[in-house]
Amino acid sequence: MTTAQQLGSLIKSARDIMRKDKGLNGDLDRLPQLTWILFLKFLDDMEVRHEQEAELSGKHYRPAIAAPYRWRDWAANAQG
Image (cartoon, rainbow, N blue to C red):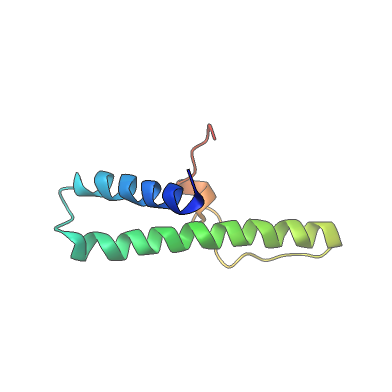
């Protein structure tokens, strides 16, 4: 499976899960939330990379979003 196909499959899965939520009425509710979730995941991945680079260079890094509000603190699967 290509990266584009993997991303498409992941988004389809998320949309299917969100369709089951009684508090969301249609794509007008789901699309902004899905966009925000994807943004938070991207930001957290970028923050991890910046933290690692700072650690390697002996610098201090202050993340844009503090724990427990980061993706890895509330959304990441603890079992990998």
